[in-house]
Image 1: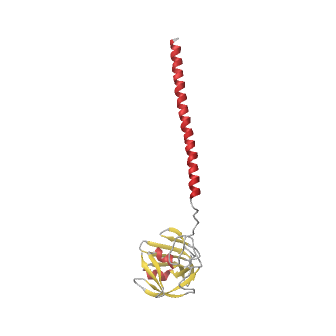
Image 2: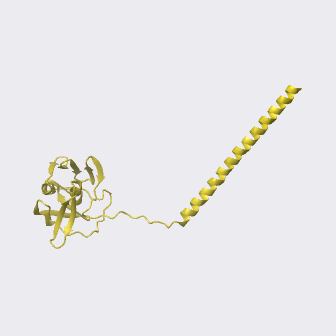
Image 3: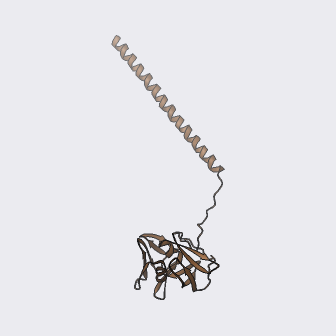
Length: 196
């Protein structure tokens, strides 16, 4: 009989231990649910207190390549019709032919390469142009707005175009890709290229 009482006492102790452990686990689980509901309520309250932020499209400029597929054809450009403009860099000052197109100024890849001290290779069959200066490289194709800057594909604001046995591309794309900033000098009516 003593054995039976010991077994009964052991079973009762085990039952009590499991009951207490189970209720603790259940209580902990219930607390988590309460916290979860509490956190969700806090999130909803926080979100309702935040002001709505309107979506803003990135501003584009004719002289800065944003590397985003945005363009504003209504942008005011220094010229309205294709013409020659003075361009200044540290090494060269000369007039170059520019074509305004959809809010951008297009320049001949050959001409801008010469001014920036870069090389330009034109492949007339495929209408692809490669600009290279040191370890900087830019590849563009006529009829496409994709540019490969150091082998990374980025969108240009407008398509490159083939004119006069050359590829014309936005001056901002060519200059920025080869390490130059483009600015406009209103007093001199000149485009200024500054090394970055």
